[in-house]
Length: 241
Image 1 (cartoon, rainbow, N blue to C red):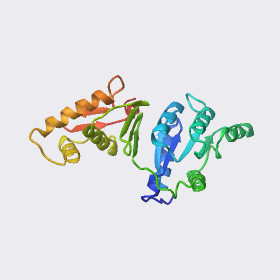
Image 2 (image 1 turned 90 degrees about the vertical axis):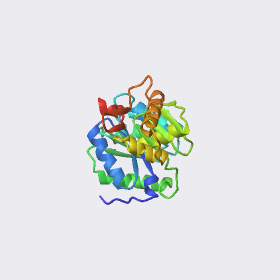
Image 3 (image 1 turned 60 degrees about the horizontal axis):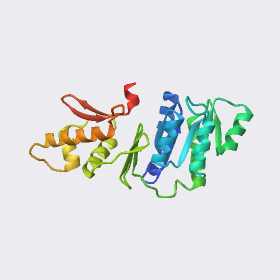
Image 4 (image 1 turned 135 degrees about the horizontal axis):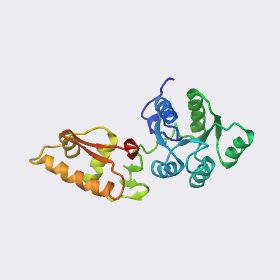
């Protein structure tokens, strides 16, 4: 597959809803190589939450999910954004299932097994008809698991709930989301967030990490992890399962 990445294409956000991790990974790679940004969701509730946070330009939606039925997810997505292009994926190839999906608002339908090239071509056609590949859009949304940060409005949500951060806490979280799962040392954090070296800078980082933990992780499965002797990392909850 030939990638078409660039400043314009990378702004296109594609929500991928499928409960098969291996297939989700393949679709994410294909979407990335096409020059778009993938936002994977393992189930219907996650898909709806992430969609509200990242405002996708297109959706690849499996018809069979572990919680909500794909048709239910499609109808809710359609209710919130009637013009959102949706490509349905399903192993069910009976004509009535295709008709159900199309009647619920799907723009196109691909039956498993399928080729990744076909999915990308169909998505490209849907995006072109919707005008998403030609229209500059906000590229400030970052999503990791159930954590959503919107740079343009400086809003943060976890599991759909708003999280109030100070300016520096927001900058610190943005740094972590720009380097998901990567261990960042105190020196790296200090340099990137404060752009300077202070006496006791390590303690400064510790104070802000502690504060960010209280706001992001309190009452929830932790995402901010201390890597002893190395630094800190932000990881989705799924990584610990």
